[in-house]
Image 1 (cartoon, helix red, strand yellow):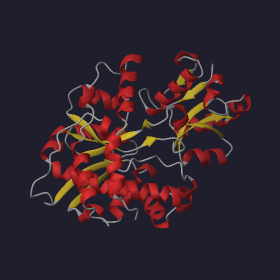
Image 2 (spheres, one colour):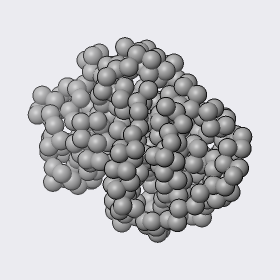
Image 3 (cartoon, rainbow, N blue to C red):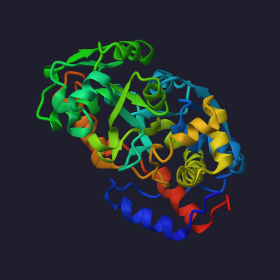
Image 4 (cartoon, rainbow, N blue to C red):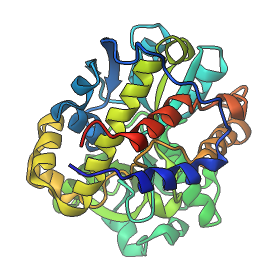
Length: 352
């Protein structure tokens, strides 16, 4: 288990000074009352902190029972959250998330669940062997993308954002390429092997597997195209964050310790953690191990990179027709739960 020190939490608190400050509200004497949290998650390596916290009993230690609901994509759990069928879910930042928040669904982000920090980006940009031979071999490689086909699942997605950043970095525009929407990897990878699709966004470990099969090459990474890009956050209803404050705090504390263990294992390959993640994702420990250290970077205390979140919403609002109106910056993220969780962990970490 990775130890979270008081110094580490004080440092993280200083780093969070740029957040819109919310009043620090401490849960009262019933803080440890038993609670059930219905939680949506996507069963990928980035779910590691949750899987670790569950396997090592961190939730149980705080009288929290997690009722998990697995979704192949975090965005698929958002309707259930908005309908009150889930209490918390992990969600990738997308035009769809900002739309739900802007339309009055009463949702707030409250814990950052991964960013693409330098050297840690888990989303590869794969290119066809043909584009690779033309010189697409790094973030500047998008200059070779003019006229190429980008295989992509949906508009407003993380992949849409990353590809646009890459094109602009190379001096190209979105209409300089052909966007082929609605493509899952099962469709785009065979076409890439035939050089009929030139560029796709492929997370790990799938990118390494496809490269080994000769389908294409990993040309660059998300962290090179959009450094410190926030990939996902935990999202909950404003009602849950208000009425179940102690539950949100305890959830945050357990995930903080899970984050610490996850980040330590990303560096040292802790065998127990590799097995926990393997069991939770259906992958093998060697496959999980092979992706290190390119696991999604987790800030231990869940402090968000607010400039990235704000910039992403601004992109969808001002540069596309996918977001009719924006959420006010100070309504995007509710930091009350993580602030109390950090203070409690600093004063006495219940997991060590």
